[in-house]
Image 1 (cartoon, rainbow, N blue to C red):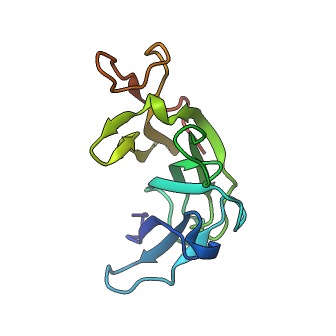
Image 2: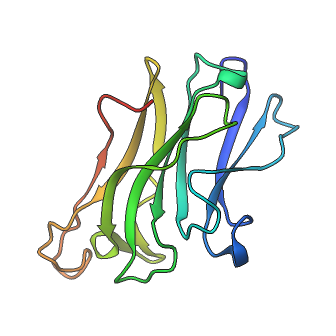
Image 3: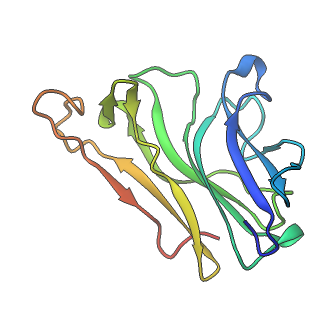
Length: 176
């Protein structure tokens, strides 16, 4: 929410991609929680780029508002949506807007690539976890996210006797 009470909502959505081949991010805003702006694609990369985006963490600088609202969106993505367990490379990136979401920077990578075999295996498949958030402090954004590493001797994370290595990080001195 910005200084004037506008609520910003971002989610992954495939409506702009041919045959829903990948997810983009979309945004909508509301000043009363009942009436929402039309859904707008966040252009962190071109349509049909083949990049698959998911697990967004949006922050709005509470000292800004309206057409000068400062937004930072951190997220996970696969640079190539058409991948499988052995070829997918999970990355962490961010984009920002200083005009209330009217324009956005392109993706800047902040972590990765991570192999899927480094991630914890759950009953729903390989998961980095949906532990992501972004917050502002002193006019600077701090994303909080998970990064997996291959410190388990090349064995698959979650295999018998193998400990997974996944930690929570942020970036210093923050993001603009």
